[in-house]
Image (cartoon, rainbow, N blue to C red; front, side, top):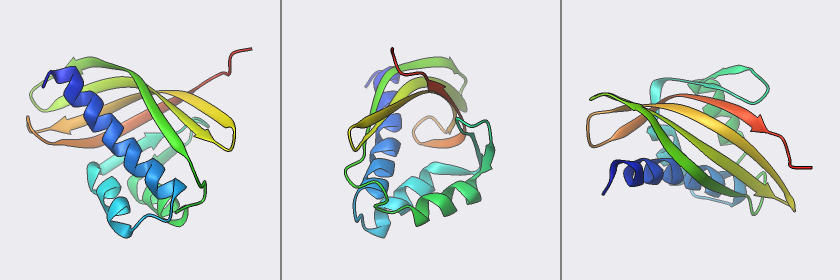
Length: 132
């Protein structure tokens, strides 16, 4: 598998679990997969500009199970920005679709790797304004 195909799979897998958790009555193993993909030192800067710790994010995600029934998250435009033997920086577009509305955001993520497995260390999201 090519490096970009592998990165795309990593990004899609995480967001598939997130969409399943938020959009269905998913079993706890779905949350566990999502949580286990995040490094212990994970942080996220969300579209409001707030920096969120791993614990705060997971607490919010845990309580939001099936809060958006039917939620879909589509991942596009996956681009590798930089890579070392232990770290990959990736940028992609994530589009959440729910109840006839959609929200797009451009995401830059830092992933730790041992060459085979990936762990999400940091995410920075920027809202993409709706086309007028």
